[in-house]
Every structure is written in C-alpha cells, then in structure tokens.
Image (cartoon, rainbow, N blue to C red):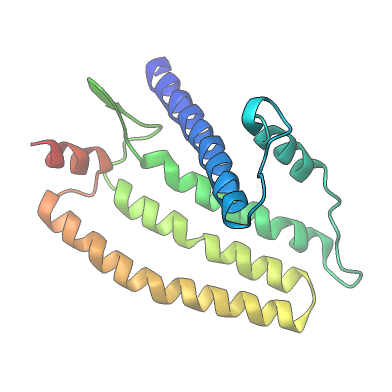
Length: 178
C-alpha cells in the first residue's frame, strides 16, 4: 500500500511541476505575442513567477454578492474541484516497470465518467447560490453543454471498452501494451 501511495504522490508532484512549466511557457509566449518582456522579475528569467502568482490567487479577496446564499456560493467551486479530483483516482500512472494508481477498480472507466459528470452539479450550485437570474441561466447553459458533450465522449469510450474487453483502467493500459 505504501508503494502505491508513494507512486500516487510522485505522480501528483510531477503533474504540479508540469503545470508550473506550462504556465511559465504560456506567460513567456503571451509576452512575446504582445511585444512585452513577460515574467522577468522573480528569479532568473522569471522562472519563479508562478509562486507569487499562486500566493496572489490564494489571498485574493473573495467577493460574495449581497443577496447570495453564502454556503451554496462557496460550495459550488468546492463540489466542482472535488468531482474533478476524484476522477484522477483511477488513472494508472506508468512508472517504468510498474503501473500504479490510487485505486485499481474493475469499473474504473465507468467510475471516472460518472464522477467527472458530477462536476456540472458544482456549476449549477454556484449559479443557484449567487441568487442572480443571469448567473443561474449561465450555469444551466454550461451544464447543458457539458451533458451534450458527454454523450459522444461516452460513445468514444465505449469503443475503447469493446476493444480492451474491460472497464479497468489498468486493464486498458495493459491491453495497449501488448
């Protein structure tokens, strides 16, 4: 069990490190396109700019509309993030000799599809919690769009399941390897 947890934590660390690199690259390219320097003040060549950006985002003032339901307004993004994070629990990480993940369920693909579809509940909760008709309308439109994209995505996943003859994500990866 400890080996699997170690692999999962290392995979999460690699994902966060990749996010830092991609954010830095995106800011440099945006600076080049807009004829400006881009991040250049924090560290050599602006390599440490992502850390002040993260701190800024964490300490920013959270503005709640006066008529909003404060609990629902807070819970919308929380539900969205939890649903999105739970979908990663069944994704196997290829670590050279072994494949590891947080959980190897025999219905992993079905679990990932079901949990990721719960993210739309967070969007609707946030729109409802703001107590604004336009926010609610936008949230319902976003949820409808997410539902309309899930049908073709599930049909595409069905092709993978029929080819691999399993719903296990590790089984699908093993089927691809040979």
